[in-house]
Image 1: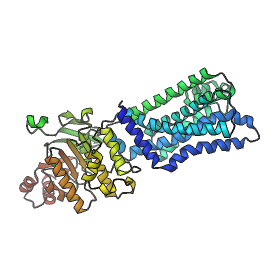
Image 2: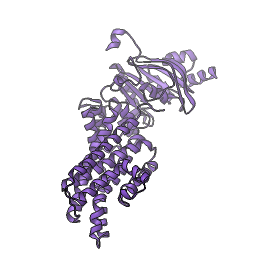
Image 3: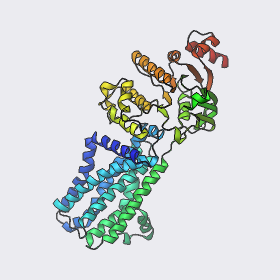
Image 4: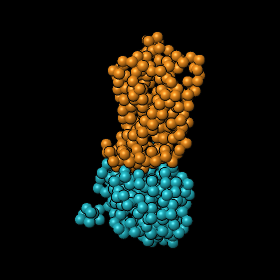
Length: 245
Length: 243
């Protein structure tokens, strides 16, 4: 671990994003557009929007973050810059954490915009504290980022990388309790959903939408999400090899 | 540093290096030395194992046998990572960053001085393109950005994989002059090429074919030994005597 090299990497990733304003704009705007669409989809049933709006406020940023980071890391590999960096005195975790900090900044802005829009203009009704909604939205963005960085290790091409979205994220989406309450699932599926990080993201938002006094439960969910982020980053660093065939 | 006290210890010492890739042997027990403070040319046709040999020296190639010692340490040691500059054959730089942004980042990773990016940009003749997006440069210019990154931090050993491919003759002459200056200042350079006429610019030559070393000699020694008038002919005569 070296702070200077980690921060230099974060600055470099942010500079790359700055040179690609379209990607940056899509990262920030797409979740907001989807949430607005959701709001007007349920224009006649505001109670449904209140039920699922919170969960999707977490899920939409996670999806776009996952896609962008998985391709960003893959590009590092295919452009040869990863090999160059690994011949230099850069720790593998320095690289992953640099990415995490840069995309963490984006996740922060993304969550701020999406939460402000959803709770303000779109009028999502929640019971819990607003700052926790924001915190969970940031956590979900970070989770998408960490999972994206991890799976990019297993992709050799962009074709493979984008397919990790349906392979890794959609099963979590199906089992996270959004479509069927997790208590109502077959025991095996329930157990599977217990070990999938997205379940905790949705669980946290569900707590916040349904009852005012949930800080403890939400903090616990956030801790699980944070643990998964760190685990995914560490595993991602462990998959990098300085020597290859 | 150490070399001046210990005499002419080679910068690279390789014994019995074997690399097998995908079940096929790529290097067959190579033995060679690269003297410090010199320009050594690694010549041979495309596909003969030059890049694999260079990757083994830099420590990014998985090897199957033998030993590779670089600047007194086993290849791939953590301590070597700031002492070796490596230029890959395909330019490895960020296309979406400007020239100077690329070099600033690599300089920060190496812990090189803040003035280093501009120094190496000048060394490869890209000062006028300093703030251009790398993806918008020509192939040869991009290759020079990559070379500039390898020069950051004044590494003791430079491992350059085809640094002059696709460049015009004036630029090639300038770069070889740069390599000469670096060697005169004490650096060791190992430069691969499949263009035999670049051989005369080297102090020593390593001729490779099919994962084996055909010859290791000075350009003059090689010509004298084979009775050839140029390195191309020398190469052919060596191939003829072994096959």
